[in-house]
Length: 307
Image 1 (cartoon, rainbow, N blue to C red):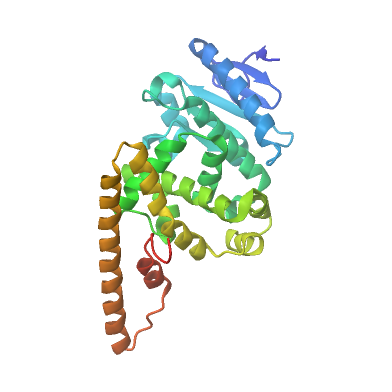
Image 2 (cartoon, helix red, strand yellow):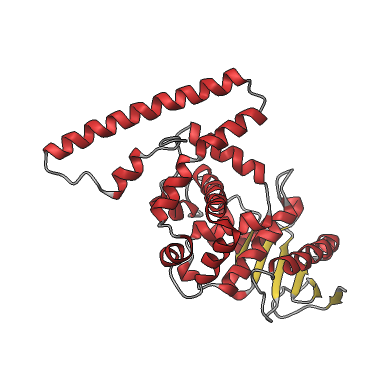
């Protein structure tokens, strides 16, 4: 049951507040219908997600911003990024734009579930142990938001050769960076997280997640998934040709078109590998170490080694 309450200390004057269980939503009177839907979505999400990520006893407080100015006042450095909401996860606070401030087609309910998951991840892990990309990936996979859009974007990233290197991935989430790279980072995080689940299964995946309360990501990944971040990333990159194939077929390409794409990809892969080998020979002659991490990652472009 939803209770309609008065103004609370964490909400601005002129706002109303409704609550159900742990979920409390502050809103302008004009957004009452949106607020009620928000409560319903989050209560349902909480019941679903708490099976894996218990919510505890502290309330989760949501503020719906009626104007962009309100959102900018609360979103801090992320006010300029193309985001619909943010979570101050350790405080149990979520700040979202009203639906009328978002582009057409925005998955508003999926966004609410996404931000709720950030709060739950914070309540079940030590955030210092959670890479930003993994935090976002878990939230996207569990919230089930825009699955196909992310798959298509990763396929385009692959074809356009703009896949983000692992060591740069967390930095790509910077709010004041390139907007295209920012979107690419989310799509890549989603795709890598799905790949990890496919590789190790859901049970071991959740062992990795919950172990982050006590150990760093690298340690949790090694202990519960038998992987290093580098091996995870390399395996994911080698699997990307499948995303391109599926995206091409669903987009209406003919079999000839798909084969042409794969042929071009194979050509560039072989060309890249040839250049890498020649460069390695040159470096070996100069006495350099040819087995650095950067060189290994660069040479193992997706679609190789039996795929």
